[in-house]
Image (cartoon, rainbow, N blue to C red):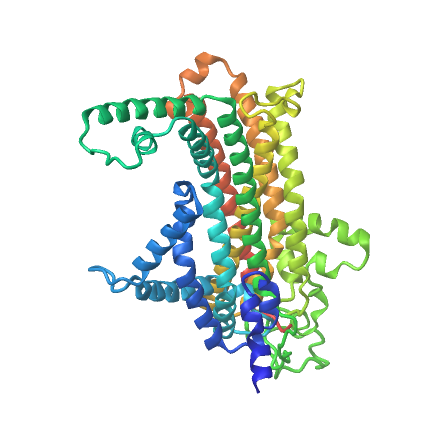
Length: 513
């Protein structure tokens, strides 16, 4: 019994470092254990998060321990407004967990599962990934403060060396006369101390102007930025593992009694072999019954139905074209209850294209203002080995990845609510599938709009100054014009994506597959 019990809870203890492994064994873990472990992780992580947020104030290991102890004491000390903070933290985590699990419900759903069943799985999965999320948050806070931490550490080390060479006047008197008591209100000692503090501050300012301080800033910025980026990528990997289920248990359902895919009228009792009506239609809307009974038109999306390597290569572009320009045709092809998980592969493939497209778009923007392509090899003098173009491409790639991932998750949640509330056809699995299928369209549309905005901006720069000055202030100002242009294209692109998504949902809510 003990061996079976420990083997069932083993994935919980591995969840902070191996969330995918823990989620793949979620069915064997009792929910009460995952919830208790998540609460313990919240209480343990709270002082660590506070310490990571104030990491730049820590100079030595003793200071770090004192800071942790102070935060732990506050956590279990009753205050006038929170009694105690640990209780408030437990309640806050529970509410946040229920809300965030509801937002992530489509990602945890499987075929033929309603919203309530998917939500229960989502809650359990969220409690499992909670320790890994806390580790990521701690890493993000630590690396975001790493530059200041490393700079203050270097200043502290430099001042330690300076103080060894220039001891404090009080320490000098004690060293010279160990048996003599130092008088606190000694005027001479006070003057010597004030002069020593002035020299110490001058030494600190001198060090901050030195090349060693600049090197510390460079190293701290490099480690801090890359640490934040890696932590962000790990954050995305955690939520990618949120849908991990090794043994997918779903019950295939029969499509009988059949319904009309156009109006949802029950057509199971209508005879289809009547000689007088060789092609019977739905008595409610006139839609051919064969289109609803024979699923030959439901071949699914181009990527899922692709059989050869050539078809798979062009499938994302074909899917993006159908979604952007022929959403009704795509809706008539989709299979809402298919057991294939190739849409997750498609979303990952679309994410892999983001670095390439970001680099191309940024290169086109820089090349318009630097025809000699000097931005590719110029080094920033302030940081030594720092190239602004590559750093911006690096940063924009990560921002684009995070933004696209969050947008897909928001679309999935909106799809699930639309199917459940408006169309009374709860299908959270199809909600995340359709959201994943929008990934190629979102990326290609964003890339196209970025290039178009750069072209419009270059045309604006080529306009006569008298013409641009005559425009309203929001358009005559270069900064505001670029922001308005970017915001306009972003809103139009989002509205277009959402409107086409709604059109597809309307077409696919009635299906016998």
